[in-house]
Amino acid sequence: MAQCGLCEKRAVYIDPVSQERFCGEHFSAWYENGVSAAIEKYHMIEPGDRIAVGLSGGKDSTVLLTVLAKLDLDAELIPITVDEGIGGYRDDTILAATRLCDKLGLADKLVSFTDICGKTLDELLSKDPRQACSVCGTLRRRALNQAAREAGATKIATGHCLDDEVQSVLMNYLRGDVTRVMQAYHTDADTLFLPRIKPLCRSTERETVAYGLVNRLLTDLPECPYTKYALRAGVRTGLGKLEYKNPGTMMKIVTGQEKLLAKLGPREGEVTAMGRCELCGEPTSHRLCAACALLEKLE
Amino acid sequence: MVTIYLPDGLVATTSAGTLEEILLRLDMNPYEILVTRDGELLLADDEVRENDVLRATSIVHGG
Image (cartoon, chains in turn blue, brown):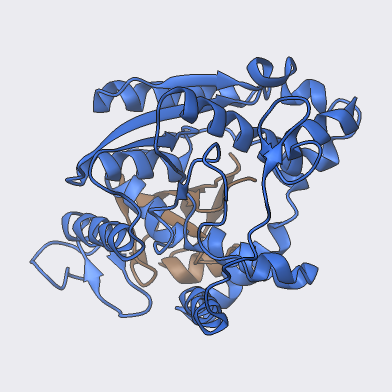
């Protein structure tokens, strides 16, 4: 039996990079310290902030809200759950989100795609489900931004982990999208767009799910039926294999990306001027915002 | 035999060995799968014995 490097208890997690072994208690403390360090390093939270937390009820957002509630933050947490309207999937995760909020003594705010565009995701995708992830992502961003603004939030926290960050970096390169490759951490140039923070951005998905399991936060939930259409699946599988063979690869990729952006220097003067969407009034640099353009296309 | 409840709801059986050996035998990436026995997380080099019942959780999520 492998032993924790910090006490006599049985080890339940080994950091593949440092080879440190942790019991459940010391692993949890190590994970929480990592999240706290990322929040501090990237100046994510300021005293008095009202943080809208995107809470799907899934693994990452469940861990995110739990850790934020546990850390000694001088900030108010406002969980927001978006109901996309996905039959046979969302009801269970919404229930998990509600239970977590009850446990933490927080009030969950629910917003649905029907609220923002009059249709469920299932209805929007009835003709062509292949674009599920881009449609869902665009409308979810809109729903979260709108609900957070209405709730008086100053920032939006999402459960994106290191793996998500690295996948995005690589996908931008694979698409040859230089503009996105060069995007710094915060780029939204309009007060109607709330700043987004990703407190789990330096914690791997593996660590995050392990935290959820060690602390018995996770319940068996159905997988989103549209996952099979996710474009990033191939990138994720490839990165997962690299990370297994060469632990620390993902951290090296994001660190390299940060160094590249630092060498490029500040991009003052390059921020696109924002106008308002002709249909909904949301900020956009085009005639229509991304959500309205998408809905118009789907009509 | 070792019984493993898989993330997709299926159940697999295999012979004893280390957790890493078992996951590779089932064509799973050990980075992407976390496994518990009696609710406790197992390490890759933990020995899994005959008649053990394991539960596998995938770290991968949709979207």
